[in-house]
Length: 177
View 1 (cartoon, helix red, strand yellow):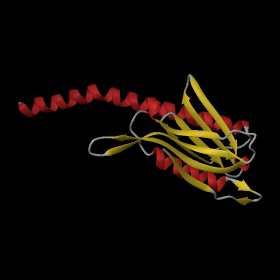
View 2: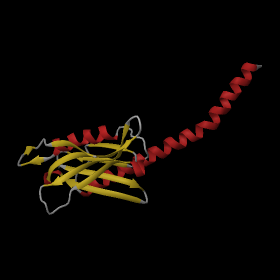
View 3: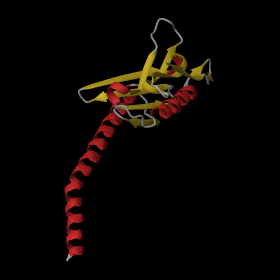
View 4: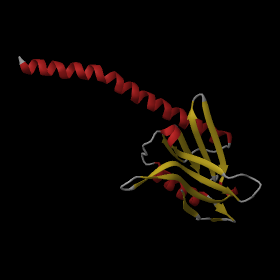
């Protein structure tokens, strides 16, 4: 009799939890699909396609290395930011980490507040392009690989940037804080 009750409790628990799991996964898939569709639409406007992409939190980045174009989308359906960058116009890219240190009696703790890639234009007339990968105010307090992702894409951008007919591999990691 006890094993029957145990099996029944496990089955009921699984039935009660499963809709929440499916709803969460469905929402994530829908968000990812929406971000990828936005990247594809931006690329279509530029008469190319996205050959490599990545999706995280509420953002996505993609690149077409042949056309030397970078596409970035961030935000939710109500307020989506679209950025397209011609990589030929970029002099340098770097990862920017904004952090603060909290001093305590026994030790200190470094808290990362923002991670972004900063794209510096060749022309000083144009402002730098900032691609946000993590912001503690909107993404929560826990990092989940955003620094590694920003460093990876900084390298990809460095490989895709063209300077006078050759690949310009300048891509430095800079830390502010």
